Length: 272
Image (cartoon, rainbow, N blue to C red; front, side, top):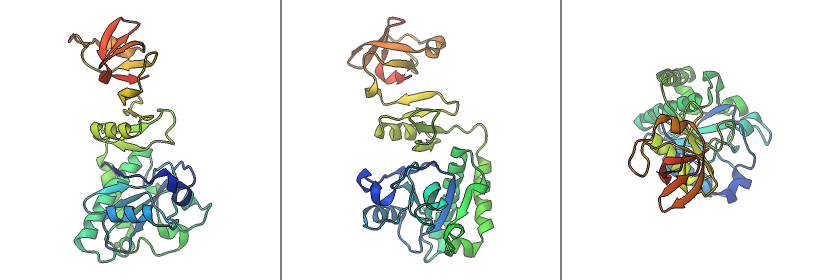
């Protein structure tokens, strides 16, 4: 699954998500009304109270409204509580009236939560209820229908992810996962996310950077080649892609690599 990025303005961080966060797990909520995910996110981001959450999921889409590397005020356990400071808050929509919209929202939420578990290398044990942190009977409709039932749904989705599933992670560096802002099964979605955050690159599951917005590359940059052809049309051999090169010239959409005196297209380079 792929979260839609609709992130809160940084000028609201002080109110809605004032602390950096290295997440430890996921906290499940039900919205207790019948609004769409888009409306839930919009209302959370624009109102003047501090209550906040990371993700809203309805029957059609899942939206990330607060960066996962920032905390959110959703768990009801205080300013230094584990839920508020270390858990990703996920709101499942349409829980007031229930019915097919809620059923399908819950199914989609199970997929999104499983994707997060896969992304962070977590298991079902990293999932909590809002109730676990504050005592509030939430996620109310999910609890009414059976909490273990919902965990089983997530586990089934997690089992569908196998070792061959490629996830493209959007990070500043591979070594530091804390500021990661997304993991995508579709490369183009990962690239779009990186384009919106130019200091970030796209890494494959082996930790190799395979994309970064080309306009970050300047003369003197250290780069790697990821394209298939030189600008002359000749095929780039695999051994060329294993090394790091220095940009000596940039002309329109072409770049001259110093060490091999060859021209390649700017779009076929990533920062090393």
